[in-house]
Amino acid sequence: MRSSVAGPHLPMLRGRVDLFEMTVASTAEYLRSVWPDELADVRFEIAGIPAAITGSHGVDRWRVLHEERRVILFRLPIERLTRLHRNDELHARMLIESCVFRAVAELLGKDPWDLAPDRFRHF
Image 1 (cartoon, rainbow, N blue to C red):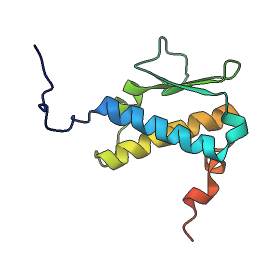
Image 2 (image 1 turned 180 degrees about the vertical axis):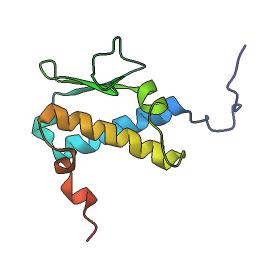
Image 3 (image 1 turned 120 degrees about the horizontal axis):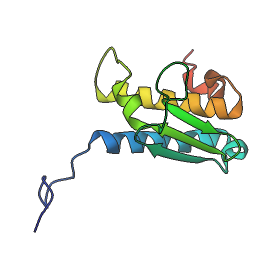
């Protein structure tokens, strides 16, 4: 019989997949709270990689299906094809959040900075 690597008395280890899913979910929840009417019926999905290269700029990081009200984020291209100047959990989260913001901005036809202007104002 198999058990967890961490054992029964230790918390489960957090991996890249867990961090990615948690970050997408929390960012989507935040954006839904800011844009409740526009994002009420939007589905956020996570896939490993795109089925085909459709973008003219290389591998897609996300795909927006307007008519189906779906946003699909591709975990592997986001994690592995983007170079971070500092490779730590904070910067990884910021990268994932920025992809969610840009995908939702594409869905709504807005600039990503307009989705949550008060979030970035520190003056």
